[in-house]
Image 1 (cartoon, rainbow, N blue to C red):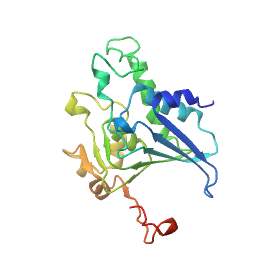
Image 2: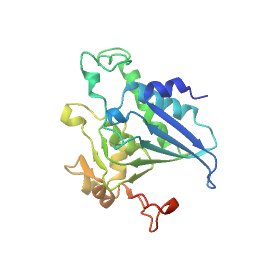
Image 3: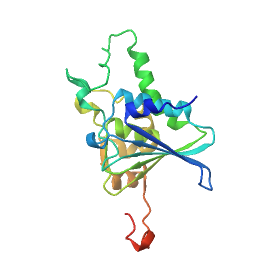
Image 4: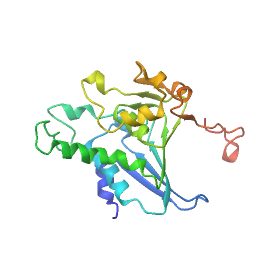
Length: 213
């Protein structure tokens, strides 16, 4: 199954596949809505699902990152307004006969990251809120910058975090660290065992420039 570029453009996504790595083919998925801090819409979730369904068999590692200063600010809250998000279909009501099927289609944008044929890595800097945090939790590994801020925001909005993030959170973070906590910093996540720190280079970067931190 091929990946339709139109689906990626519609969802604000970029996909790069690099065959030059000695360890195997690496795919980089970029959430590319930096003006909205990579806020998510159903089109993005469907685009992520299309990537998962059409990913070439030679891919061994998938890196998920956000363009700009945030990984993802979570769901685009304009979806809950009368005006909605330009270009997006209105959300189906909960009593719609196809509502559960619609939710499952959105969840498919997350669940493929647990496919045992790949290793998935969330490269998080800035905010990973709500659905963005759930996306990071669905990856096998989370690599957090020092400014990373993670939060399951849905309960504060009267919503259920139904994009499959709660079960991997229970798996990634020890029970003792979960009690009463739905948010945290990169340092806290690393301390509790849910993430690892991005390694810092000891020497300058290419051309003698200071290394990224």
